[in-house]
Length: 510
Image (tube, rainbow, N blue to C red; front, side):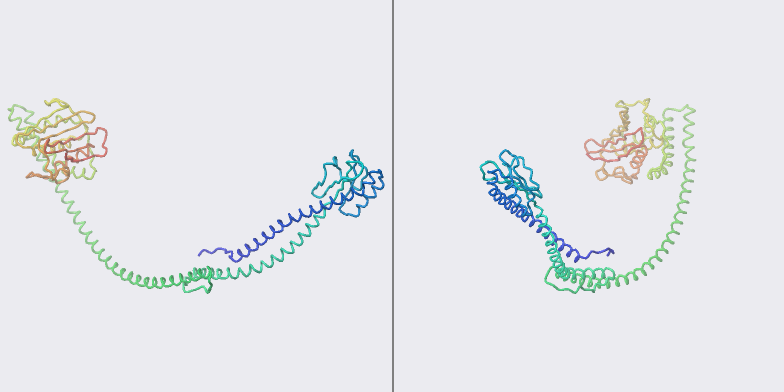
C-alpha cells in the first residue's frame, strides 16, 4: 500500500457536525433577528404616532390663541422622552409656529404620517385647533435598535458557545462510535499490506453497516489466508517440478549439443559433397559445351560454304537447332535455380520473336511431321511469311526456351490433323498467344504451371510449362491458360515493356 497522509474519518465527522451546527445557529439568529427588528421598529412607530396625537391635543389651545410660549412649554415636555430628537408645530401655510431641539425638516406635513429612516423616525399628527391644517411633527431616534441588536448578538454568542460545546461533546461520542472501528480497520489493513500476514483480524462487533463491513473484511482475510496456504503448497510443488524439469533440460541440452555436433559434421560432409557435385556439374557442362561447339560450328561452316541441296540444308539446320537446344538446356539448368530464388540477373536486349518462332518451326519440323500436326503463325492477325519484325525487350535464350516449351507442350498434346496456332499481337501490350484444340486434362488444370505437373505423356517431366512460367515472371510478364472441352486450350503471355509488376500466373477452366 502506498504510504500517504491520512485524514481520519472521525475528524471529518466532527468537522461536519460542528459546521452544520454553526450554520444552523447562524441561520436561526438571522431568521429571528429580522422579525425582532421589524417588531421593534413597528412598536417605535406606534409609540411615536400616539405621542404625536397626544401632543397635538395639548397644543390645540396654544395654536388657537397663538400663544407660542405655552406651545414651547408643551413641546419642552418632550425632553422627558430620550428618544425624541426634536419637534415643531407647523401652521396650515407651512410656517413653523414653534420648534423644539433639532426639529425635523418637513416640506409638506400633510403628506407625512410616519416616515422611517435607518436610524431616525419622523411622525406627524394634526392639531385639533381652529386653524385647520396645523400639524405637530416629532422626530425620534432609533438608536435603541442597535443596542437591542448588540444585546441580541451577545446573548446569541453565549448560546452558540454553549451549543457548540455541547455539539462538540456529542461529535466526540459519534467519532468514537464510528471512527474507532474504521481506524482499527485501517490500521489492520496497513499492517497486512506491509507484513503480508493474513491471519490478522479486526476486533469489532455491531449490528450496523460498520459491523457488516468488519465481518466481511475478516471473512475476506480468512479466504485469502486459505488461498495463500494453498498457493504456498502449490509453489513448493512447482519448485520441485522445476528442479526435476531443470535436470531433464540439462540432460536434453547435453543430448542436443551432441546432436548439433553430429549435425554440424553431417552439414560439413554435405557441403563438401555439394561442392564436389557442383564442380563435377561444372566440368560436365564445360565438357558438353566443348563437344557441342563442334555440333553447332560445323553446320554453320557447311551453311556458310554453300553448295548444298535444299534437303541437305534443312537437315543441317535441324542439326544446328538441336545443338542450340542442347546448349540452352545446359545453360538453363543453373538459370532455373536462380530464377526460383529470385536472384537471376536478366540480360535484356531487343529480340525479334518472329525470327525466334521461325527457327523453332524448323526445329520442330520432325516432331510436327511424325505427329501429323500443323503449326501456323500470325502477326497482328495476318499469316506470317517470315519477313515480319516483332521486337520485345528480353533475354534471347530465355525467350527462345519459353516459346520452345509452350509450342512443344501444345504439339505433344495435339492429335493427328490438329493445328497449333501461334499469334503475335502488337496492341497496348505485346502478346504471345498459343492455341490448340486439345483440352488440358481435368486433374491438372488448376496446377498447370506448377512444378512436376504432367499427365498423359510417357516421357513428360512436368518442367516445361513450369520453366516457361519462371521465364515469364523473370521478364515481368503475365502468363495464363484457359481450357475447356469445347474450344480447346489457349495459353497467353502478356509482356510488360516498363518493368515488372506483380506477376499473375493462373490456370482457369471455363
